[in-house]
Amino acid sequence: MDAQGGSVVGAAVEPRSGHGVELLTYADRLGGDLARLGDLLAGPLSDFDGVHILPFFVPYDGADAGFDPVDHAQVDPRLGDWDQVRALAKGCEVTADLIVNHVSSESAEFRDWLRLSDASPYDGMFLTYATVFPDGGTEQQITAFYRPRPGLPFTAYSHADGQRRLVWTTFLPSQVDLDVHHPRAKDYLRRILTVLRTGGVTTVRLDAVGYAVKTPGTDSFMTAQTLDFVSEITALAREIGLRVLVEVHANYRQQLAIAPLVDLVYDFALPALLLHGFGTHTVDRLAHWLDIRPSNAITVLDTHDGIGVIDAGPGGGQPGLLSLEEMTAIFARAETATNGHSAIASVVPEWAAMPHQINATFFSALGADLTTYLVARAVQLWMPGRPQLYYVGLLGGLDDVELFARTGNGRDVNRHVYDADETADALRSDVTRALLALVRLRSNHRAFDGTFSHRVLGEDRIELTWTGAEASARLEAGFAAQPDLVIELTDAAGSGVVTEPGQLLEL
Image 1 (cartoon, rainbow, N blue to C red):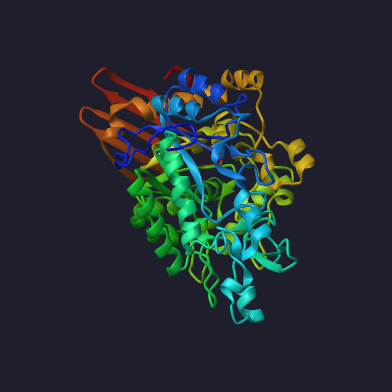
Image 2: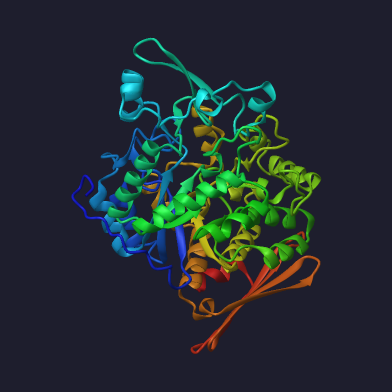
């Protein structure tokens, strides 16, 4: 039973039916709270059949925007409660995060361990330096660990009796890592999964799972040991009745390796390939990716972490879909398009050649050119898999430089807080109305129940086609200096052609 009295549903969730689109949003940044989010999904955003609500636990506004839960089992009362999450789940599928790598240093479990040391019922739950290096570690071993932020992944904490511990903190000093192999950490993760399922969640995203297993002698990121743990936690989630989405930013081969182990992976390579295509006026790299990409992909262009790009580049000693020089050019073009802002906001991890993500909105990274932006979104919504639109991208948001200036967190340029009036205004804008027309098309046109094919029409032109019973949907996307699109639709009711972005408003 959870805190709200719900019972656990143990039956496995059936795979998503249809071909709908998912919204990615914070509960508080699209009008206020869970109730307001529910109103939007029942009203102007009703063509979305799923919503991934970014961490809404206690507190939702911590040091890492909810990814540092003090209480992962409770909805922050400022946002609502589990009943409201369950109400949302009646109208659309709900995805939530299982923050598998860490908890907040203010969590009851960690505070109890600091107070009672080895007498705590949570002793062993948290990863320490001594856990990984019982006999000590060499400089080479310690510096080999991959960390997405500058510095070493340890923070000093003291028990109440004065004993000092060096606790593993992969991300922030306030985010203490779990020893995911310890029975007490496993019990914790099982409890959270059960609460999520009882609360109406059908899919869990394994946040930061690529960092969860520390193996001396390796960089401890997406190793064979990590894949073993992914298989283990996926089996546990499925046992409870949840589907599993894995978040990994790494060379595209890692996505290919992990895709068969879980239900869903992200296509983080697509945004970089589109930015490369627009910058070089070529489609060959995009076409190659379409030949080999996983079929169980969540298709994104932007997320709360920025614009994922590292996945398309070389990494782990492996070549990428794009070369290092081509990746460098993507960052340079984004810097120009954002008047230098993306270079300031994007963080380069220790010993890395470039950032993981471009910290900018996707619209800003394209110089706020509406046609180019709609071509990019049309390609996204035509891709096989499940498209997911981030709320800032849906509302045509530009970089929130004021929020970044206040917080110093580069990712905040793409995390604007929309109040109810701003949301209403954005929903009336041409860019959002055009995007919602594409969402409605992807969600409702029978062609997307069919089969997908693609072909290259020229150096700067690609065709993406869905063919179903008595229905087809063809997108011709041009990546020339002046991008363009052609959409041809047929079904039992007739046919139609779109050749101008403005015509999307008529769909």
